[in-house]
Length: 235
Image (tube, rainbow, N blue to C red; front, side):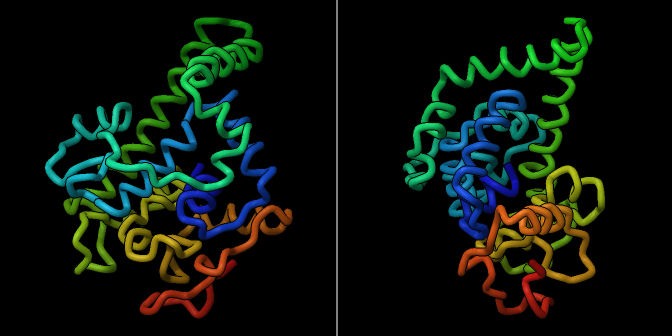
């Protein structure tokens, strides 16, 4: 999600092979955790336009911990449709973006776990546990990295509340999406770390994809922003 749908589709910083984008989206939404790619891209683009202000579907500045957790499941409505990408109009993406597929995904993902462990109670525990971890990851991105009490700010003059959480655990868990202050300052840059000494697990995974020939940089993603402490993009 972070590499392909987030940086690839929502921000167009990376150009993945179309077949891979469709494959990973169908696979993830069938046997993993369902995330509607079309509505997610739309919400995320609204989040960057209105970050922490009215119009942000993820969280307003005054929303606390429990309200933000509720919004992870039932976000604010978006004011417009910002997800008109051609790949989101493809047949496979349109199918997995339907409510029917969202319901089917819950059964399909549970049945896969049950087939592996052959115990419905153990399977249900694992199924719920994975979703609890996913909710925690979502809260890192939407709550802790959007509250000025936590983390640090490389760009203190930005008007949102985006923060950088640089510890290894949140960076690994979110594929570097918790470096929100960096990311919000330059959302179209292919990486969220703005210093060569900053741990960036997301960038590591994108490098693996590049070695496989699955991804290349877009013109905006490869452009080195002014003020970033890097000599090159690093990909």
